[in-house]
Structure formats: C-alpha cells, structure tokens
Length: 296
Image 1 (spheres, one colour):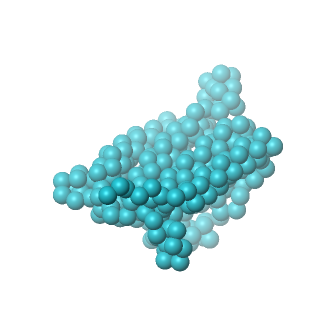
Image 2: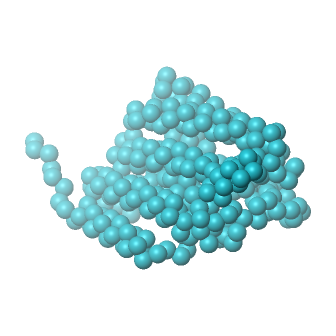
Image 3: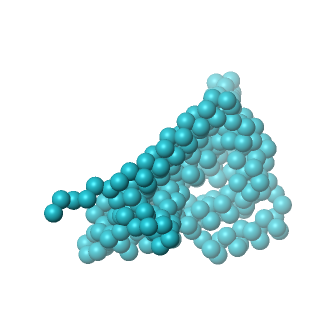
C-alpha cells in the first residue's frame, strides 16, 4: 500500500482524467493510505495473540489482505478503463465487477469479524491498552459495516429506474446531492450534501485512534501522577471509546439527513455540544474521582 500510495500520486500528476468529478486515481490513493494504516495495525494486533489463536487470526487476516488486494486491483482496472469502480451499472460487465467487489468486501468483513472475536482473548498487561484494543476493533468492525449504507439506490436513481428501467449508477457516497459535486480538498467529502464516507472512515480508524489514546495516556502518566493509576487510564479509555462511538453516530446521523460536514445545522451543533459536554464531564469524573483500593 505504501508503494501504491506513491504510484497513485504519480498517476494523478500524469493522468488528468476525472471520474464523477474527482481525479481518476484519487480513490485508489485514499484506499492505499487507509488500507495501509488498517492492515499495519492488524499486523500488530495479531502479534498480541499466542498459540492456536495467533494461527487462526493470522489466517483470517491473510484472507482479509488477499480480498482487499483483489478489490484494489479491480478498482485499478476500472480506473484504467475510465469507469467508476463502485456503484457502476453502465454495462453488464461493470455491474458484475461491482457485485464481485461486494462479495470481496463481505468476505473481508467476515474475516475481520473472526479476528475481532479472537482479540477478545488477548492478554495485555496494561489494562488501558487491553480495553482500547477491544473497543477500537469493535468500532472498526462497525465502521466497516457502515460501507453498506452507500449501496442503496438514491431517490434520483430509483426515479431513473422507474422511468427508463436503468440507471448508470446504483448507490452513492452523497446524500441529497449527486456524487461528483464540490468536496473537501484531498478527502473529497461533499460540501453541499451529506456524505456517508465520513462515518465509514471514522469508524474504521477507531482501530488506530483508541490504542493511540491509551498509549498517549501512558506517556502522560510519566508527568501526571494521577494517570499512574491504571484504573484512571481505563476509565479515560472507556470514556474516549464511548465518545468516539458517539462521534461516529453523530456524523452518520448528519450525513443521512443530507447535511454537509462543514455546514452543520443548529440541531447538529446542539447534539455535538451535548456530546462534547457529556464526554468532558465523564473525563473529568474519570480523572478526579478517587480509585477504590481493594481491601487486603
């Protein structure tokens, strides 16, 4: 994926074609960066397991890597042809490729489910990392599953199918607007409507965010005596996990309402404020409430 990242950057500089309003190779670039981070993290997670669990998790992750690689090659093939890789229904062949990628993604999700279940049996001395690994993996699995929300025909596509019996696209990233409109630099997330890629992305990368929170707390513990209490760090990891899940839910709700991330409504801002307030209060309580010592 690191090599693919470099190659797709070069491809974007050389090949100026666009697909649905974005550079033809932009999606492959983003998938390379995201996939590289995702599977790099899984390589570490699998290393935490021992014996038979390690072997089974290693096999499951190898299956996931192979399926992701097959999907990536299919996406590259479509980019060379100048066709959308996802949602394409421009020809029976394009639709067959899209369906095949759907099967690959389903298999990848199931392989990840196996790995996630096995992670519940890891033994990690630092309890904050112990819980961060588990909550991060579960949220990442949910985030991966949110990709299915993009495969539903949009109202425009349903109208086209009803009127003509055909639509060139089945599914979309955007809600309330057509794909290919104005978007955020590099990320491409819609600035005129909702975008289902946002909760999908945030959910997936809980796999990195929550363990990094636990590691950050461990570093801060060298300077803040309060954080040297394992129970305090565990409380803060659980607070961060709940807050992160709330954030994923919030941006999913925002996207489903056809609202751009960068132009939130008053309702969304109020919900975000409540979430931030609740998590801030929980974090303060986690840090300040005395830890009960076990009776000897």
